[in-house]
Length: 441
Image (cartoon, rainbow, N blue to C red; front, side, top):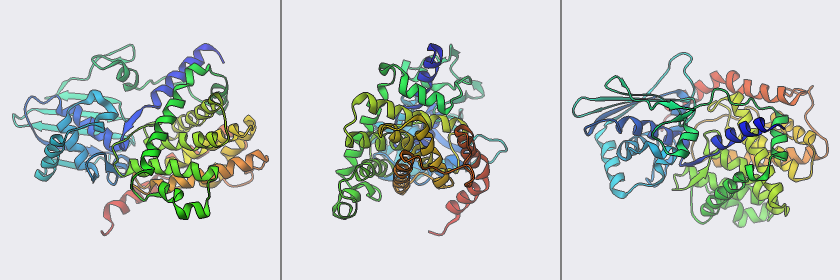
């Protein structure tokens, strides 16, 4: 692999694996609000937020860290109170009790209004904020395509979007500069590129992914000490879990991974390393791989390369699928972790491709019905399926081209998965949102 390709992939993965506090969709909404409100000279009077269907779906039912509340209103209010867009997706990482009191007061006063933005050809990740202050000033912000990509920023109709110089935003910290803008020339990945980079890139270039996995494991450990969400991770470690799962590698994979999702979806004040804009994808692309590697006594280099394989496969699939879709992210991360587990088992590149085919032939079609505590159940589904797929692959047993949607070429197979999730499930996506917003409570 030439140096330019190595450099481009390194830049891509480092931009996609970043810290996030709480669910990334509410954090993105809070960030867009913070951008707009920070421009207002006077106290904010009212805030209108327009969301794409997928953003609305993913933000409406998830816990907001440190608040004991779920959903969009408190996220909007905290974004308005904190007014710190430089903190990006870590905006909700820290706030005082006074900040929370002010935010709750805004919610009680009904200052926020949320709407569905249903415009043709609208990106599935879209947040538009219009904020007004007591003096009549109006600020507007738009985040689109990625959770931190600020596309428009205005005060009283005047453009306030920071100027770009050499792909960075002026006035932001160095870390934020590197991740804020969208690079329209991202290197198009393939399975071969992913595999070659993961197994051959200089270790010092990819070691950060090991540290990212350790951060996510700390969140899993934190979750297992408390009571969060549906407690799936804790269940696996409890008496019933021990009775039916024992202390197997699968049990450890399930408990840490599902536990981290339990905590995050319940609004625990934890920061995880996300992948492609999703904290749950970041968790489920790392923790099954890390815990399996630990159970097998794999050294740090092999573990790191497996983690990179998993994480970069997620990025590859999301390049084709898009940030948000009706296809559950646990399908995507499950594919990545399954291929990586084959590598940890001593399998070949071809056998890793078999694991991918087994996963696509199995779990394609699992819907995303928003971010919420039961995401930990879907994480456990992806983990179990991923391990079975890897075990089959190690015996050269895989879903063949004559079976269902699986293609012979591995990249064609991944493209088919993306097309089904991106285009084929559009009507399903609309029906899911309709059910979520109209069900009897």
